[in-house]
Length: 177
Image 1 (cartoon, rainbow, N blue to C red):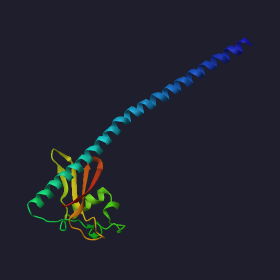
Image 2 (spheres, helix red, strand yellow):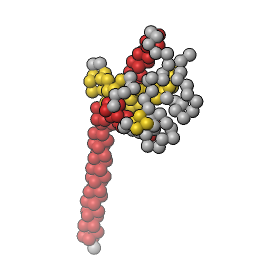
Image 3 (cartoon, rainbow, N blue to C red):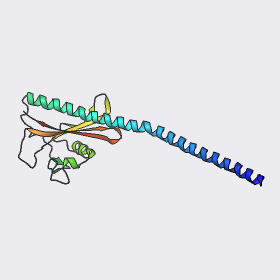
Image 4 (spheres, rainbow, N blue to C red):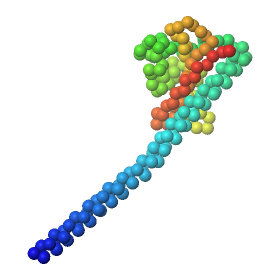
């Protein structure tokens, strides 16, 4: 009887060692997986931040251009600058248009449309100086398309585009004083 108890105890020790090694292996694989995905996540966050900064740069350039045009007397309101069509159809500035309203369209759809039909845009796919991987597209939308017309204000839309189809959109309502 003593021999049977000893051999059972030896077998139990082997099972415990195997379970501990399996647990340590699982923990080790998890740590390796986490450390490998960390830089990828950080890279994606950095890319999105750079794309947002590109959209901000597009806004800044458009703001300067509009200010220069108003101050130089070249334009007195926004009426001739509004972008109103998408894919050749009206409705880009109409919140009741369920198919074409700009807030229902993706950034990629808007950028592709502006490049395909470069009318009434401030910038279409303008590359960032120093880093051609990033570009911005900027246009104006009439914010009262269905309401009382007011050509002294609008929505300035700036869309930044980066590598791996990263997009960021900024919308700012601007008005003349």
